[in-house]
Image 1 (cartoon, rainbow, N blue to C red):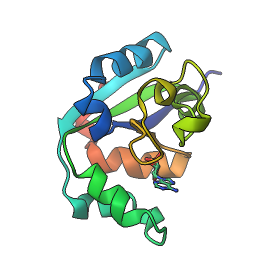
Image 2 (image 1 turned 180 degrees about the horizontal axis):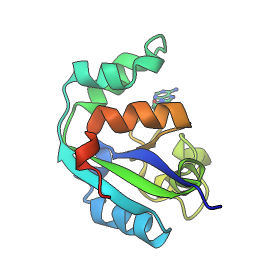
Image 3 (image 1 turned 90 degrees about the vertical axis):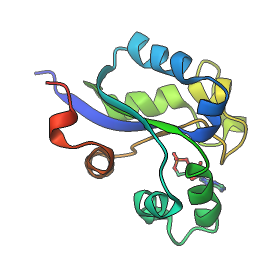
Amino acid sequence: MKTLQRTLTIIKPDAVKKNAVGDIIEQFEKQGFRILAMKMLEISQHQAEQFYAVHASRPFYSSLTKFMSSGPIVALALEKENAIADLRKLMGATNPASAEEGTIRKKWASDIENNAIHGSDADDTARFELSFFFAGYELAQ
Ligand code: CMP
């Protein structure tokens, strides 16, 4: 039986500023992800701290949360078989210097902070992250 999985992705402020939103969404669709919900918004540094709470003890936490609140972002709920792993493959390595050809970060990321896109890394984080940005009624049936 095929099991559909959901994941949360964020097109980060650097990619929005580069007008990369359309290109990145096109890649989601071409790779077979179904868009269940999508919104453009700006979050405060406090909201970014809540979203990235798992990284609170990291040295880059303050810089990361400042960056994530520095401009508009686009959050999407995506669905596909194996969505979490497949999205991470499409995104490429966190540090674009190590990202493979054909990945979103290879094309659009500038450095490890300005790295264009976020994707959930596991089932439990996907649940938390989806509910952070979307209420159940906002997801397509
Ligand atoms: P993301 O997938 O959004 O998850 C956490 C983010 O922290 C990650 O992408 C990077 O943008 C950022 N990050 C991870 N490691 C570092 C680092 N060493 N320096 C700065 N930012 C980092």
